[in-house]
Amino acid sequence: MASTSMLDDIKEVLFTKEQMSETVKRMGEEITRDYEGKNLLLVSILKGSVIIMADLMREIKIPAEIDFMAVSSYGSDVKTSGTVKILKDLDRDIAGYDILIVEDILDSGKTLSYLMDILSARNPSSIKICTLFDKPDRREVKDIKADYVGNIVPDEFIVGYGLDYNQKYRNLPFVGILKKKVYEGSVSE
Image (cartoon, rainbow, N blue to C red; front, side, top):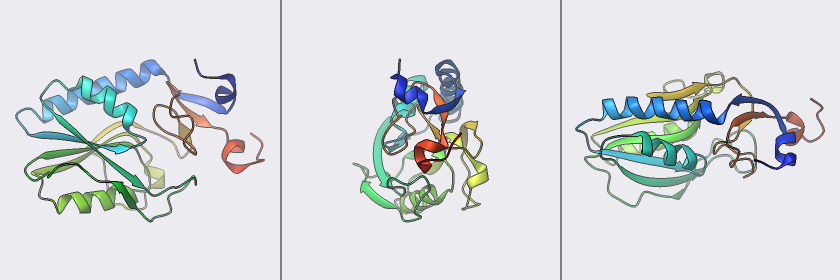
C-alpha cells in the first residue's frame, strides 16, 4: 500500500485498481479486434504511459512490437508549456507499421498534435492514438481525438497509475484527484 503521506495528498479516488484493470482489459480487446492482421507497433510516450503500456500489451492477443519515445512539455508545472521537446526518439524506422501511440492522458492536445505530425512524416501505414484518460475540457487542439479512450475525466489534477505531479505519485495503484494544496502551495481544500 502507498505511504500515508502520499494518500493524505489525495482528495478523492476516481478509479480503483480493479476499475483500472477492467478498463485496460476492454481497451486490449478493442485493439486486438481492430488490428488483427496488421503490423502493430505500440509507441509508449514516457514516462506517464509506462504502466498502461505494460498492462495493455499483456491484454493484446495478437503480435505487436513496442517502442518508446520521451517528450517533455510540462517540466514541473501543472499545465503544458506548449513547447514540446523530444528527449528520446524511436529506435526504429516506422515506415509500413500501423502505429498506435499509447499515452496516459490527452488534455490540451499539443503534445499529441506535435507527435502526430512528426510520426506521420515517417511513412507509417497508419497512426492512431490510445489514451488511458481523456480530458476534453482542456483541449486546445480541437482536431486531436483519441481512437481508443479508457475513461473521460473531469478537469481536475489526477495522479496515480503512471500519472504524476513533479515526478511523484506514479506508483499509486489507483487514480485519484490530487489536493490543490499540494500543487498550489497553501490553498485549503
